[in-house]
Length: 116
Image (tube, rainbow, N blue to C red; front, side, top):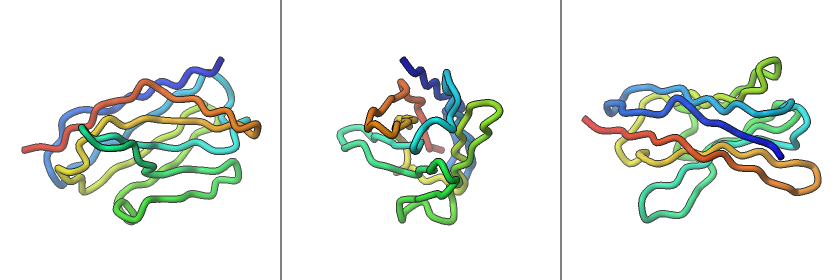
């Protein structure tokens, strides 16, 4: 069983920055892809950013130019650098990892609150 543990959430003012971390219990290079999703109250969970095994990245349009997904394979950790945060981006942010067999693992999430 794979464990994913997110950290780095918290309260930040509009326009501020946060860096989220997702630590995996095994080598992240064994996954087909890893990603960050978010779910705001009353909303569906949405993909924010993902990174493939090759290192290719993908972002939802609303975060392009502000968020950056990266990884440190030596630490088995994926990061999400979030800049210029907006109040509407208040949500629980979840890390996930997908295997080549189509199995997806999820972390428990970390809350990001963007408010003055």
